[in-house]
Length: 138
Image (cartoon, rainbow, N blue to C red; front, side, top):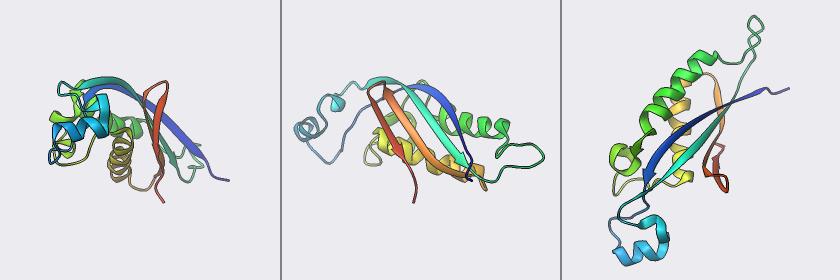
């Protein structure tokens, strides 16, 4: 029977949605208030769910200290109190738009790469209590 473990981390960050090749009018039409020039922020909740074989000696599928180090490096240190568009190169103008969907996919890839053998099966990003995006790789 599969076993899953979910760890939650939080971070505060600012962002805006914008495609630099579009006019300001087109950005506003497509992205609405999220395209405003001066950015806006959220207190994000990120949940990362992993699965794997439970170690019969420890009863754990992942060492929590290792998982916490990875989440600190790949999520908190990268995003907390940052402007995602300006401080995270992968989300700079002309690259990824920092939607919840793209943040979840990006975090999945970074965490999976850092964890190795443990499989990341879902990453969820909530901007607030009413909106959450999840990414589950095939």
